[in-house]
Length: 121
Length: 339
Length: 126
Figure (cartoon, rainbow over the protein chains, first blue to last red):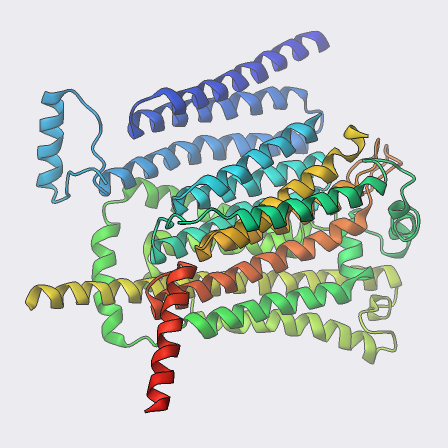
């Protein structure tokens, strides 16, 4: 039983770390703010979640387990909201996403209709 | 091993702060610096300090820097001359300091002089004399209560200073103008408003938990005050300063800040009146241990009140000043267009 | 000796980086960030002095006998809070300087001050 817990906890921690590293590589390699936001938002939430699950399997005390569950729920709630807020702030300030030319015309038209400028900051 | 990696990352972040010209990036990097040093403190077994540094250094400090950068401009002018004299001074001072550290005891040595005189008395006698598990709280609140009193007064003074520098006289017609600008902005932020409304009660509850759990684990008045203030600041940022002023009256908050310091001082005076020394909690109740618990509870409550109120006051002052500046800029632009 | 004194040397490096930012950069906000780096390096110095090999955090527990030194922890708790108070006051001063001079670069503020001084001297002579 111990060895099963150790192996699964190790797998969860390893997956979590790998997801966080891949989020970091995404920030460096993706071309545009919105794609970078997407890379970090998704992988950081899941990565932190997997690390917390890996820690939960090792905890012996019920109080520690309860605290880790609460932290997991709060992370799942707050981290996507943060990505949403950042992307919304960027759109509100006029940062236009890099798209193919037809999609770009449509996006510029939508932004102009809402009354925001569509020039890069 | 852990401390080598963390310290190297700290040096890398610090060098990046030197090289950056964009102040927004500098503010973010200073937040990362605070978080890395909080992780370093955890590795060094300093859990209370790590908690405080994470709340203050990575939270409030970054927030205040961002508010000020939004008021004063985002980029730094590049220097025209090379700062060779500064580099020379820094190199000489650094060399002398490194020469001075060659005599110091090695990292982690248990027989260093620092561990031999006062600390064993605190560690061995804290449970019998005061009766709470967290030795840092017992030293902070009971053995060295006078230093903590000075610290609370310093925070209060900083709050007074910021009020003196940044307070604006509010006229009723200003509130209406600013309110109309804010209302049109906040209707669109549906997701953020709902998530924030869900989260703020839990943050406030967590602040209370940290306040009263400081006896048994990391925590105490300072961390609780900062967390409480950050919940209120979140509300202010989202719903606008006017709505927040209707919910939380600024005069009331200023009163609470003063009451916290007064409570702290009155505990000391009550000890004097009961026959003991200043801040001697043994005389506050029939049993010395119960007296210690009562005294620590009261002064941690005073510390928490003052820290939370002063952080809220500081943020309110910065936000109000920013609103007035923006309103003056809008009027200036309108006047330019009319001309 | 490198491993034993590594923490102290990194503290000196960070202190010197903070000092360099404060001396060599003209922007007032950059100077405040440099002050924060300087302060945090001193905190790291004290906390790494307090660590004991084989000890744990200074919260009394049944299965541990050696604890880290609690006294530097208390001193640094006070220092962190005093540091944020200083930073808040410094930032409010920067806001007022920007309103009064229109800029937060040290050289431009110095130029405006010199101009005002020379105008006052000319006005005093007349």
